[in-house]
Length: 241
Picture 1 (tube, rainbow, N blue to C red):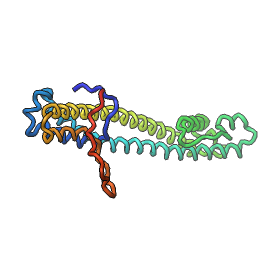
Picture 2: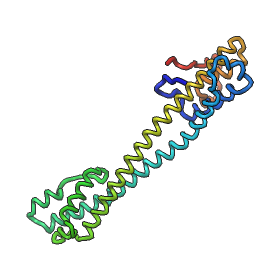
Picture 3: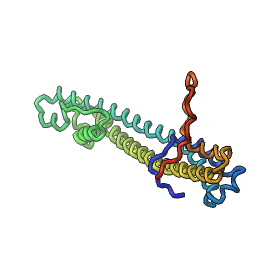
Picture 4: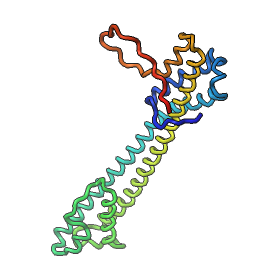
């Protein structure tokens, strides 16, 4: 089924509901009448798509949670790293008075936030570098070996969390793209079925009605008092691609 639309017309839940309705019409008592206007194999392919759309709705929630979890995990490590960097800076500022080059190297006086991962990793890298192979290069300035070892651990962990977040974002982006394509394909098939039914029963309003309903606007909550003197809404046909 060729899809020419770019954006879905309905929310995914509404598209799924109308898809089920359209499938029942396509495979019900009107199946023989519709066969001349609906491509062969549409029912089988449409059933697969409608089922896949239902699964995609559930998967979307899981994918979003995974991305949020990865982001939250990275931010927590960023906070721990930020605290460590500030401890090292404070120690050097107080115990390495006059060592201006060391202050500059460690960024004493500079501001950065825990969520700025590139800056956090850069600051951790400076601590690890100045700590040296034995991790004791800053001991005289109040930065213990365990502090440098913690910088090594946090740097590795934060880099891994960054990769996890990038991967989660990529997974969600790809899933969203695939889900939108599926959503559009379901809507297009609904259009085909609806138009086929309308064309098949042009002079039978009763049999034509459920096909017109496929294009009707989603139902609104009932008003507190029903309006009077108004005409019933006219079903909206699908927009031209």
